[in-house]
Image (cartoon, rainbow over all chains, first blue to last red; front, top):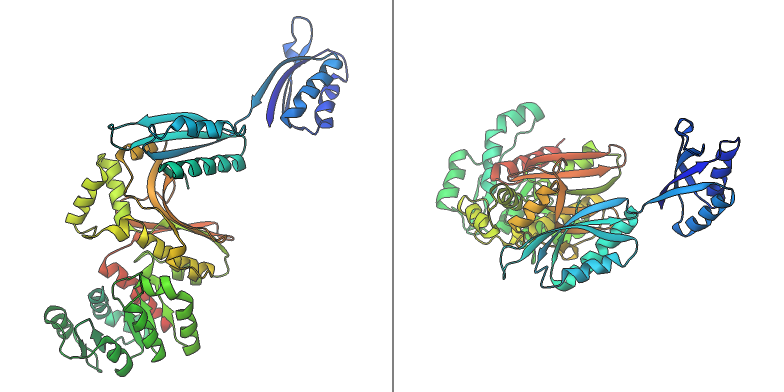
Length: 163
Length: 316
């Protein structure tokens, strides 16, 4: 998972290296480091913005290590869902309980339904929907589409996916 | 279809003779009712009369293929995907009689591709079928000849002009499927029984021909996962459009054995997003990258263009 983290370092030599070492020690892959010497905080610390890839379960351990070194972890931002896809659905979407379909995807933990526009022309007529799926990666996005297709086929809903 | 071929062979006779040194003559034509023959070559009037008044000779198509001396048999009977007939027997008989075969009929190839190609090879004759996929759009010879040396990893595209017309018109005019279908039938773009087109069968059959001829599969049209366009709503087209997509009936075949016909979302900026009755195919290659061909998929003269290029290719 891609993680962005704002930390604050004491203004003494070697602090940046000290901050980056635990990231690699825990198997993380550093993508960018923004060392903002000119934006010192009121308490005289230097803000650093890190972006790295790391398994989520190791994140707590990293924060502990940084704190143990006397660094301040100001904020952690998780860019969880990186890949998205629009899918069109046609059928008796509401009657067949679209919530259930959405929950099945959300419960995977790696994908979510992040958008839905629905168009219902009449009670007996088939409705159409545009659904936005997001997932943590391309593979997971495909997996989510597969789940959607399986549930939809059972409910007699047609799925139109991007080429 | 057959009359289109006769028309084009006549119209282009002198040009083909000049450019390719080929003196093409039509020595016999047969339909269900009988045949006309002239070993010196039929002329325009004789062919026109055959079209208008019917046959002069009580001779079957199979007798014509077996007994009248000729080099190339052009098979242009309608596609039948149940048993491939009468095209299948025509082609087998012609190859067994040592004729080259050029066909626009998809049925025999969708059902018995490997058997027919093996027979052609055994007989040392050519069996060419450019007209079966994408009409005038060059696809099979493009891959075999111009892209020779490339590995083809996938082909995907719009292979049915009727479906493309219906979806394009539904999108542009916000009209329901049934309405646009009736309109298409009135102007002759859809047949009175449109099921082969709108249910994706025609696209599936073409996909099978590509799967077998380009990817070396031994597939029949029953192996294709098929979904047609009859359930598509104007709302769905609008939702897709708002998200930056067009809905098209896409045939998709790849090197991993995927064989699928389904309505898909095509980004509006993608070269596959062509409108009206046009056909289009993107060929994914390992050296040349993606190559996209666009052309007219249907019509007697367009199909005749593909047949003519096959005939010329036999002699070049």
